[in-house]
Amino acid sequence: MRWALVKVCLAVTTMVVVAFAVPLGLVIREMAADRAYSNAERQAAAIGPTLSITTDRDQLTRAVASTQAGAAGKMAVHIPAVGDDPALEIGRRRAAQADLDRTREIASPSIADAPDGKALLQPTALGSGEIAIVEVFVPEGELSNGVATAWLVLAGVGVALVIGSVAVADRLGVRLIQPAERLAGAAHDLGEGKLTARVPEDGPTELKQAAVAFNSMADQVVQLLANERELAADLSHRLRTPLTVLRLNAASLGEGPAADQTRAAVEQLESEVDAIIRTAREAKPAPVAGGPGAGCDAAEVIRERMAFWSALAEDESRKVRVAGVDTPVHVPVARPDLTASLDALLGNVFRHTPEGTGFAVDVHSAEDAVIVLVSDAGPGILDPEAALARGSGKGDTVGSTGLGLDIVRQMAEATGGDVRIGSSVLGGTEVRIWIQLDGRRPAAGRRRHRGTVRRRRASAARP
Image (tube, rainbow, N blue to C red):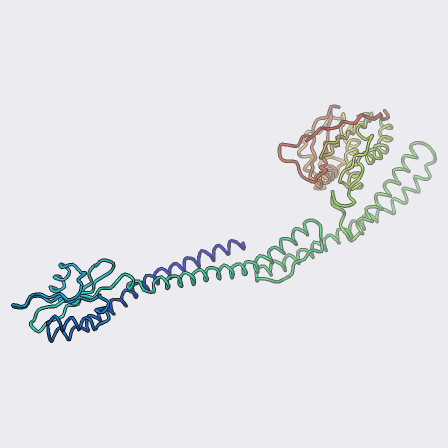
């Protein structure tokens, strides 16, 4: 915008300068020529009184020499023959004879071409009635005297005007651009989660109104987020009472595998509810994937969650396989986010596949990405695109909130990766989570592994 304003001002000023300077330069040149011809006419008029009195050569020669043009050799007098007196020519003639004859015929001053200049031909009536011609030579230098200097001055003034207009336009552009840049920067900061980003309400009226609207919107966003955190905290806190009752009832179940699993599940649920309450009460937003403190060891998280779900799988006679978790696999994802994503996918396996259906979790590491595959041997998903489009909370399947896959998708996309659903080697559904390590989203058509994928040795799982 700044350079566009400068270019517009440069073009307009240049056109104005050219429109005025060119005609003015031509007028100056015409004025210089008129000044030279006027001076020549005065020199020619000085001989008129002498010609009206006498045509004697000696007297006319002295009269011509007494003038400035005659002394410089620029004046000549042409007297036609009168009676027995021959024609006289005093001084050097530069005009053609045809021009002299034409001037006598019209009896009016004229300008004729001459070598290196012009010749002013002034007709003068003699006492005998004949017409004498006074010729005054005007060199080219006198016709353009002072024109070059005047043109240089005009050019300098024009250049100064153009430079001045560009400087003024640049300053005006800066005044317009700075508020716009501050507004864009604040919008970018707000998009990155910096909720304290605000814009100074100054500058032109339109940008000032935009700054006021932006600050108002940012205040509303902060208020809405605060209300959302409070609502999440309140709703989660309401679960503490039934959880307490459930924990007390679980404690009275006695001994046995089922009782131990129930108590462990209650403790896990209570821990998750407490984490939700603490997170909702925090004033600062949750860390962004890839930011400081957001990373975790995916192998450790998967081993921990599979230890939990494997116990339930044993009760339902499900075969479980885990691969690629023998060595650490660091990913730029917060541990609670990765845990929630894995629980959502594994929970879907238990909800939507019959008992006895096996499942597997595989981890592959590439140079710039980590891929987590969750596969099952169930009936599969008829419409993968519709499944990924869930998240509205309406529940597309009985017993589903529609948020599980959406949680996984948001976690992957926060790193620049994605989530895809396909067919697994087990015969059912395979959910592929691509976690980008460098924060760059893979280009379209290049979603496959870039670099060598190191497939880890599968670790044995309980049947």
